Image 1 (tube, rainbow, N blue to C red):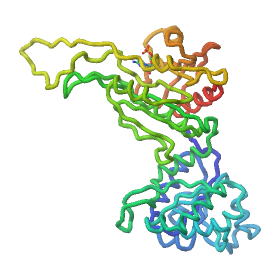
Image 2 (cartoon, rainbow, N blue to C red; image 1 turned 30 degrees about the vertical axis):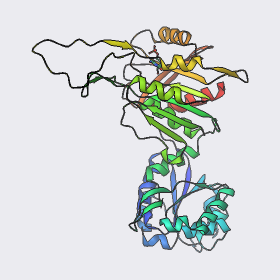
Image 3 (cartoon, helix red, strand yellow; image 1 turned 45 degrees about the vertical axis):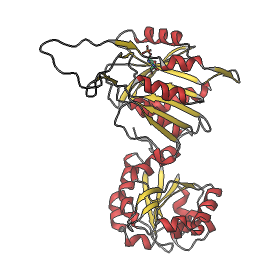
Image 4 (cartoon, rainbow, N blue to C red; image 1 turned 120 degrees about the vertical axis):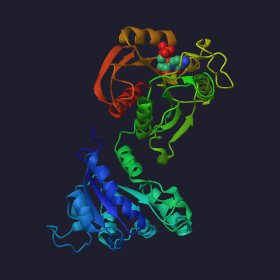
Length: 403
Ligand code: C5P
């Protein structure tokens, strides 16, 4: 699935060492289906060459407002006319100051002033430059003008210092550009999600877990942030990166056992939607051993299980009515080996929740693909096989309508 199909993006580059990452950004945006038109400032050519950008994007690179190859000789108008967005990475302190004042003394700044599309900037500069009152004034003015700032992040800088002003990584910028184009159906809403497996310790080195990869829950977290929600993701042990972390719109709590997941979830005081995607162990170990259990001849130890608390059931018990709708709106998940529809329907009624989503098909665990069966008060509806992110986006739109 390509998330930027048919999108035309002007990729602006200004003069900063972070420009060495811009070719990679261009490649990632193109992989998502965007067509890229690069415009560079004179200073940017000191860090990355127009030839590099032209070879990667397959389009001529524009540098000057006096470029006579543009048919009507008005590059600033001509280029921005057909664009869906202008993304500038890196955006230097100088360029940000210029744009915040409406100055237009080269092609890139003129293009920004003449645009009728959105402008997204990925700032990159030394930490003193970022913290300078003048730059912060630029940030304030740009925010007021509706310009979207992507980052910056804090971290190691080319000048040897550590601090705020580092450009986001190309994948983080691409993720945020993709998010920018998604419908904001959950703007202002709070979403709580459990994801991944749980791990029930037998002793310090052994335990019981399951095949859940966390991919579906993390895809829902990403789709919810894309839709404008503030997300709290409670993740069992899985190796996945936090989606859209740099937006500051997602909080992640890592937990191990079902009990820890229960405590972390019930600790979140309020949310508009609760997605219980985690494959929570139904049973924990009654008395996990403090030391590694040693082999004793051929005798196998017997392990006593105890029932774990049902997180979804207990969250569902806290539901109140708000404006005639359940708050939070609870969505459960079901992975079954037989009779999915019957089991999922039974789950919905037993837990007293408005929606259960069944994972169809045997290859769900660990796969990037899935197929869903959505069951609510009106019956069941199939969402055909697709990438988990695509399914998550569809599910978010469905739930957004419910609340
Ligand atoms: O039938 P079961 O209780 O396993 O239903 C699965 C649904 O309940 C999933 O949404 C799962 O995240 C949730 N669940 C839970 N806590 C448990 C067991 C399941 O939240 N202890």
